[in-house]
Image 1 (cartoon, helix red, strand yellow):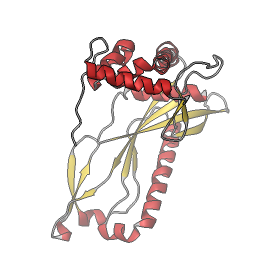
Image 2 (image 1 turned 30 degrees about the vertical axis):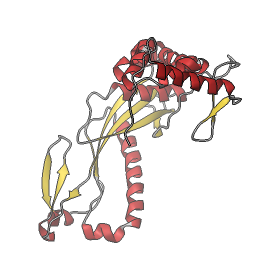
Image 3 (image 1 turned 45 degrees about the vertical axis):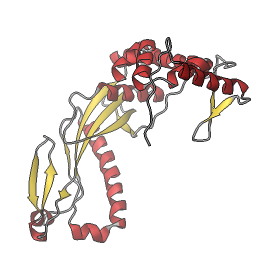
Image 4 (image 1 turned 180 degrees about the vertical axis):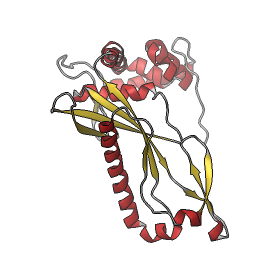
Amino acid sequence: HKTKKRKYNSNTCDEKTTNSIERMENKLENSNETNLTSSGGGELERTNEGVDPGKEYFYIVGCIDGIAERRNKEDEDTERVLIEVKHRVERFKTPPPFYDIIQLVCYMKMLNIEKGELVQCIRVRENKIKSDNRDKRTRIVALSDGTKSKQSKLDSMSKPKETQVEVSTVQETETKNTVERIIQQLETQKYETSEKENTNNMRSEGYNIPSIKLETNRVVLAGMHEDGFNCAILPNLYKVAAFVYELRKDDHQRLLLLSSTPSERNQKIANKLPFLRHLL
């Protein structure tokens, strides 16, 4: 079925839309519920009334890829290095995207780790092309420079099936070895599980373990990264949280926002939070 889009403006709206909002507001006023239930079974507070100022205002939630223990060259103490892996298609992004740096810096602040490595990973997997003649099948191999090359299946089957790791650029040998070891272990475990489930099929089809190419970028929390987090990112996070609490507190404004068209909704958010304008 087709859904009709309604244009709605908070200043001038049609009678039908106004009546719809009023009915929704009446249901909220007559309801005895004090919270909203999320799809996961948790409860979300409708307003920020009665919130203890000493309690958490918002949460930053994430899942890191790994933490490595590395020996410091200046002394014999070890230091922790946070590792964040980003999977790319065909080529590395140089320099890395700014939002990836922000994510890594947030994790470093959360875990109180001074150094991090942003690892870009490219898996070169060979895809088979169907053909009536099995011996003449070719596979297209995606290269890191964006080009493609064709390879005979008989030639590829004669090569040993093992993971090859090529690191393009790294800043320190110890960091390179640490990152290589972590990525190799993850990839090996993933392949061994897949091989147990489809051993016969993989052997008959002649698939190889995908080769891996890595590029790392060092991020140090001290200096501009920490200053940027404290002066730009954190204040803007507070503004976003304050805007959410404001909508929770005012049912009418929340309904106005929800009943707007996507373009109108984005415009309202951009007016309230200008720093999000380029993301909407």
